[in-house]
Each structure stands twice: as structure tokens, then as C-alpha cells.
Image (cartoon, rainbow, N blue to C red):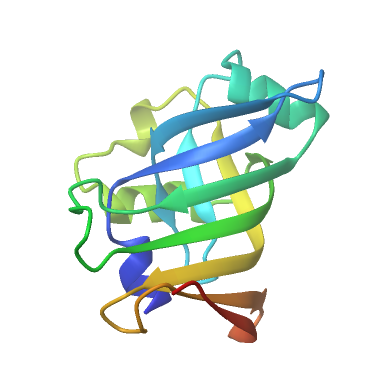
Length: 150
């Protein structure tokens, strides 16, 4: 279920924290790894990139934006930390998701978000108003709790 939710959209929203402690949100194209890490490319001078140099705390949400209110919804929220990465896995993941991407012509840095926990919401697979929180481990996801908002 979590992997399907990660593929629900090529865009995600990234929340970061400014040096003054204010929330900032940004939308961006992203790829992801089998460890649920989110990878993206960004200008280091953008506010969200600058925020991450001082405070790595971040959150990501992924959902299909064409969902209709009152119908079964789905999405995934991820909570963790992010920073610039030099890992060769980043361009591989990005190229796998976006076939026309040319890593050789990219001059911008790659960023990697490493989730500690995820919150799953899929009313077709779970019951309506049901949220499942899981910890991200080396072996996958480990259930932490289920919440029902009926």
C-alpha cells in the first residue's frame, strides 16, 4: 500500500522550517527509493533549500490532487530529515522515475529526505477515516498505531 501511495503523483509537498521557526511549504517533482527516501533536485538558493542547511527537520506529503471530496481518499505523509546528498542513488532514482531526465546535464544539487515515520491514508484499502502510522526500518515499515476518525 505505501509503495502505491508513493506513486500516486509525480509531485509532492515538502515542509521545512525557517531560521525564525516559521513553517514553509514547497511543491516539487520527486523520485523515491525502496527505503521510502524522497529525492529531488533544487536550487540551493531557494528558501526550502536554505532552510534545510540550518534545520534538517522536514515533512513530505504525497497524494493525487484529482481526488473528489466525499469519495474514498488516499495519501501518505512522511516525517524525518533532509539534506543535500552526493549519493549515486539519487540520480539513479530520479532517472528511473523521469525517463527523459539527463543526469549529465543537471547542474543543481540532489536532496534526500529520510523518513523516520510515515502515516498512510487509503480509504479503499483501509476503512474510511483510518490512518496507519508506521516506523521506517531497514526491513521496511513497522506498524506503530492505527487511528480511526469516523
